[in-house]
Length: 235
Image 1 (cartoon, rainbow, N blue to C red):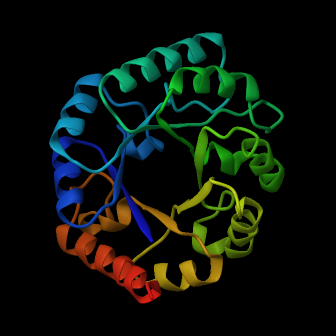
Image 2 (cartoon, rainbow, N blue to C red):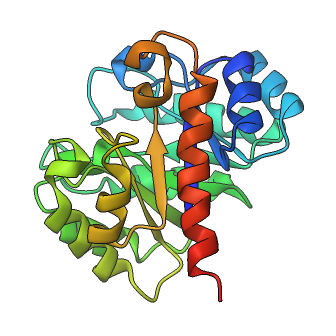
């Protein structure tokens, strides 16, 4: 079981790594669902930790439907993120008809090179999640999809997420479940859906507040819980 933790600053990144996170999603504007952080922040976080750093590529929080200037902005951000040494990008774009924006996706993938690519929760606004996933499966550079199985918190969308895991089965693409997971619900959720990667933000922060620092004790408990599951599965 792999644990991805949201980081919004260098301190978050260091605390997350020290307390068992396997990977970081680096963002700013957490209360807006995450936007692209400044390149100075990206550079410093990459220097500060050894675990993979995946960086949000999202120019604004108006919507996930992007115009030409938005795509040009994201292309520039991908180039800068790659130059900073990050391991991956977190990106998503949809059309006004709520399908995957393949034109924008192809332009971003053309610049992603060896970066890992996560399609983020723009996915949850699609009209048809299984159809959207099948579209993404045609792009081998897309490593994972971050999803809660629709607009509701992930624990309320177990059948939808289980279906996505089944559709992606046998492919390199992984379903990364996030939004609404807690230390108390994650074990049952993993057992019921079959996901192998989970994503945590506010639930591992002090007081459950997205703007508060990470809570080392919560994060350590979570990482031990998930990693103990890994040991139990190992023959």
